[in-house]
Image (cartoon, rainbow, N blue to C red; front, top):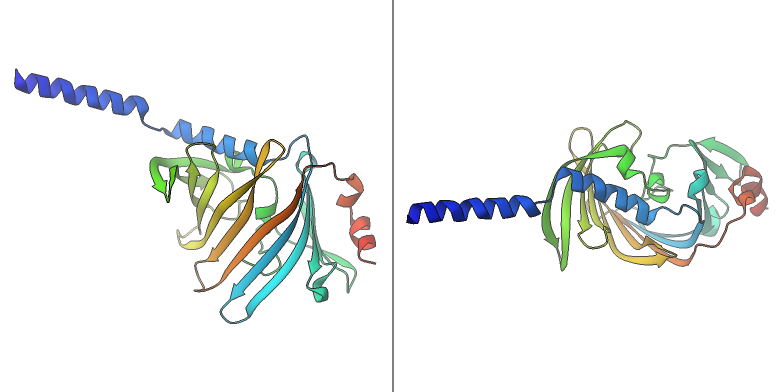
Length: 251
């Protein structure tokens, strides 16, 4: 009789656990929520970025960048304001094309979304709209904690070769689906970068990381910290996302 009661109790525990267990399907849904929360569809986005890059060999550099995004049209513009020696340099994306503009030579040159932004530990792809749900699939998901936050820890694998990192681990809040941390891995499963998103700002009905810390895992002591201010979801004129504007604003 006792053995039967124990067996029934164990079966009930297993049933209850399976009923509330998080699944791969839940992970796929969460990826969609991450994109939905951070993409500015139906409105534009702009902000002023303060970027501090720390390098054990080169020291500390500070860069100020004006950022504009039009996610509906797949466009963004990043204009460097400081330091003065780089003022006017810019990154202009229009759909699948990304150009770097050098005001000294007055030339636009093609660059890649996967390249580092201005030699920092941030990549160009960190500043465009999120397409995680389209580019990745969830291979594992589990519940856990990160500091004081209840989170889901997911491993996601790329479904195409256009992404910057083929494998990522992401820590996402259970409430709100905000990404708090990511680990980015190479095709050989080597940890390349760890990213932290300790604070968010609400912009309209969206959420954008107000502070981002990108840590280079290949060079000890190398990292980039980005802080956003002057965040706005007001309309940005279409003329800003043009080569002629980038050339003109630097004259």
